Length: 301
Image 1 (tube, rainbow, N blue to C red):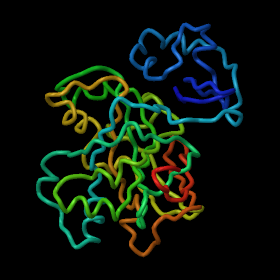
Image 2: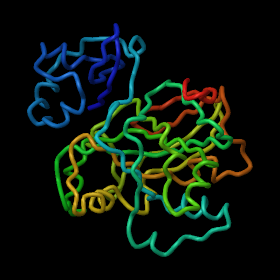
Image 3: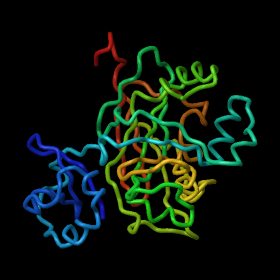
């Protein structure tokens, strides 16, 4: 299934996509299915059969405004799971990979209240001169669990979507010298979308997601990778995330940047500037597009 959160006639609601048509789950079910996608995920076993039997009637996909599939996730944990990215990004700065990286997957919490959707303008933070994109894949937790073992972790995944972990590299570099972060270098925006695709719809290769990942800036391909190249799998990531902590439906877990998946790894390229168009594409998950806007002024857009 391919879920969206969309807006039409000023009303924001959850839908499912069939053949370039969006079915409003709340409307098509005469109110039996909630409007909020997190509410649907939390009780998906109750609604699944009903959703599968809904008629393919609704809106043309081109006639609706898509928001992030999960506009207000309960949390965002972003991991650091692609070895190629770690080697390349640190190597460009004359740094090696610390041995601890190979001992356990690590993450940081991002701002779950600064989520952006497809086609939204991403405004550069004030004083930022080194704005970057990050090409990632994210999973959405679909079932409550604590101290989940890797062998059972797939049961707790509802689906996957594209994630762009926007980064102000100059702000990030300065704050991380203190030994904390990233924080202000990243908390201004994270993009998701356009779809949230259930795990059953995606191809696996030896238990790993086999999905080509690409990034384009103004139509030129900057990044090319594959989700199957993750050093740490989503199962291992979920095991780590749930240690001594309960995960709840609607929490988002990012993979971290795929190898070559940011400008930081390609120092010969220019940083993003207002007017640039960034397109992230992942097989089966669609294309997530955003335009870079001007800097904020005096705390206002």
